[in-house]
Image 1 (spheres, rainbow, N blue to C red):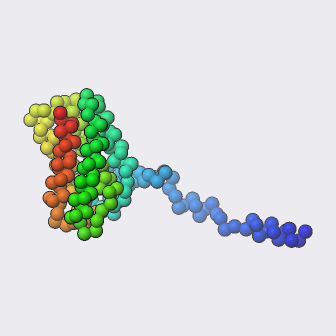
Image 2: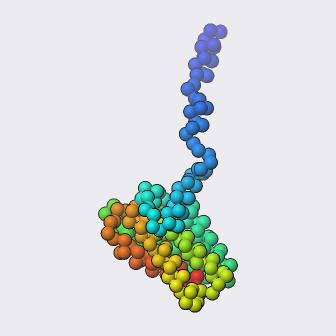
Image 3: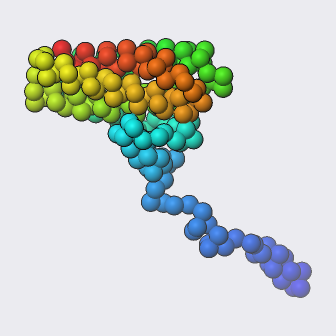
Length: 193
């Protein structure tokens, strides 16, 4: 009988404590690998184009926010009566691939495809505002052209600022902003016409 009691004592010994695990994981800000705090910080970085971008946050490959913004862009296009919202996904893929190749040629450190698509997707947020205006107003007048040019500049400035800070490409913001402006210009054409 004494051997059986020794066996039970050795079997149930553990160093597991509930207190150790309750502090290590915040259930309010991160579920299923989605960090809502980083999504919010990246969104605020795009909405405030003159604020300095934190390159460490942008190096993370997060596609939750860009997918939501891409779906919102397609939904506002659909509300405006434009059925070509399916082109958004094709243009996004081609634009991300082109920017991926270009940024890998320009930067010394290199960049992942997920990082490029994440940044371009987050910077699509002002384009959602433009297509939201297209639901209510016609963008084919002078005011629409000026608003469209402002939104294209906003998107391309935000994207180039984030790429410059994430890839340490000081002094090359205009070189990065030009292809970004071309990409967001195509999205603006879909929104206007």
